[in-house]
Structure formats: structure tokens, C-alpha cells
Figure (cartoon, rainbow, N blue to C red):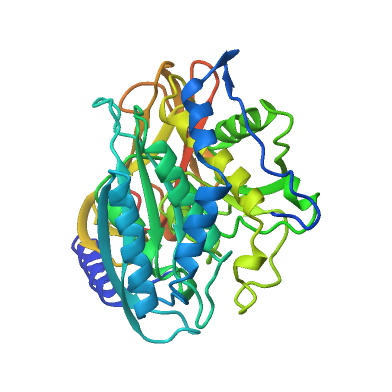
Length: 439
């Protein structure tokens, strides 16, 4: 027993010293892209959503975009970025949102070496249901690369956020909606990483995050009728809603051309959705139909953006947010509440917090889940260890005692099933150090 205690003490000291820090259209000759849309919910017209969509039009989209790019390049920490952040902040205040600046600092990536200070800009539309603490986030990044005004990358996404905020802020919803613009995206997702880490540490209840990064270019009629989506595993029901909103008006014709499921284990990501999926949140990213050849070049200017296409993509996003912000039924939502990301555990106790989201567990530990439902009780929760089913919990508190011999990295996954057969998944990767299994 003394040898075992000494062995584990040495391991704790080594881990605390050596634990790594890991980051991570106006279409030519085609002026008829913009359309009106009528939303139907259970065969009844949802007047609120219809009105919201009509408030998002070419005039407001173009005005926001012209004002934003008139500031000039917005590389993080520069005067242009600061001025753009202030512009967005003022707009959120104008919409009577709770506007905040979230300061962050950090080192850029290898292509943007240096230490940066900047702000994320957040506008909050507080939900009217005090019993519903779920939050919907719609975000884009307002920074650019050097010497580029970034009309599409990501002025289009920022304008989408501003336009949705303008329209939605004129109504009330059960759930809280946050409109967020990040800086630091082009230098390593610095702003969003800091923001999401704070969400996680404050136990914020995020239903889903919508990411818009380059949603304004469509050069042909075919491209003007398509969007692409990237999504996390528990958002298929929201994608069904997006398709329902689109199909409710045949003239809109913004079909989903491609869908890509995120890999939560990926070592890097191409936009601000990435910190959200790394911290276990649900996410859907909206992309234009094809890549923009003018990205990161001086040609990414106003003439490169299809205003009508940007109107329709923004309408779809805003309508979807409005729909799910008042929804009365949906699948369950499961979260692994312990162990937490970015912690070092010994005998089920937190003994150290790390800067990254990596998790280390020494000895055995209890795997706790936090499950939210609206109308259908949970039938069971399955626990997986490296994709192998290890345990089924059929009663509250739906937990599992993990006590396996291991020295290495493993994936812990939990899947909750409600009585309607709908499910929700969460996972966490842990470095498990348990050389001697205890009874």
C-alpha cells in the first residue's frame, strides 16, 4: 500500500509539471434571388417568424455591409478592428440588446506571431421564460487579414448577425439569444476560444451555436440556390427545421447542397465553431455553396458580395433561431457534467485546473450526466469506453463508476434515450492513470 501511494504521488507531481498546453447575389443577369417566405408550424402560419423574415431585406443588409467595410481592414488589435468592434457594440445598443465587450488576450498562431489584446462583442436578447435557461448563439468574426476589407470574409457573417439581431430584437422569445462577433479568428480562433472557455467554466446552458463564416458569395443561379452545412451529431432535428422553413416557400429555393458532420476529435478547425465542438457544445455552421477565390485578397470587397443571396441565407438563420427559441418539444440534451474538461482529478476530486480543455484522471472516477428534457422522460443512459458499451443506467442520477486499469488516453461517451426513442450524445477525452484497479 505504501508503494502504491508513493507511486501515485510521484505521478501527480510529474503531471502537474509536465502536463502539456494544447490548443489548440446579386447574380450577374439574375436579380430575382431575394424572395418573401411564409413559415408554417403545424399547418398554422407563424406570424412572428413571417414578420421577422420580412424585416431582413436588401436595404438593411447592404447598409450594414457598406458601413462595416467603410472602416477598412480589421486585423485584430489594430485601430480598424477596434473601430469595427465599437460599431457593432453601438448597433447592439441601438437594438436595445444588453451589449457587452468581452476582453481577451493571447498569442497568435505561427502565421501571426505575437501577443494580441482585443474584444468579442456580445448582444443579448434575454428570454422571457425564467424557467428556461437555454441559450442560442449566433456568431461570426469581425476581424480580417491584413490590408483586406473582408466584405465576404467575414463581413457577410457579421452583417448576418447584425441583421438577425435587428429583426429578432423586436420580439420576445422563451429562450435567451446571444448575438456574438469574435475578433482573433484569423490569427488562431483566439477570441472564440476565450469566449467558449468562459461559457464552459460558468456552466452556461447552450442549446446550439450557429456559425456564419462567408455566406455572401454566389456567382451563378445554381450557387444562389444552395447552402452548405457543417453540424454536430445532436443537431439533426434543427437541420430538419431549416429544411421545413425552406420548403414552406417554393420560391426561396435555398436547398442544402451538402452536409458534413464535425469530427470532435479533430486537432484543428477552420472557423469559430471549433472551440464550441471541442468543449462539447452543439453547433451548425452555414457556408456558401462554393469556395470564394477572393478570400484573403483585396478583391474581397463589396462587388464580390451577392446581396440578395446574403439576404436569403440570413433569413433562413434568423427564422430557425426564432423557431427553436420558442419550441415546445425537442429531443433530450445530455452533458457529461463530471469530469470537466481542463481539470486534473485524483480520487474523484479536482486538484488542478489547466489552461487547455485536456482532462486527466488519476484513480477511479464517477461519470456524471446532466440531462434536460421538455416533455419525454429519459429511459436509459448508455456509457461507452473507447466506443465499447460498458454500462447502462436506467435510474436517476444516471452515472457510471469508471474504474478500469489504464495508463493512456481514452474516450468516454454517454448516450441518453428518451421514451420516444430520441437520443443525445456527449463525450470527453481523458488521460486515465489508473494502474491498479480498486474494488
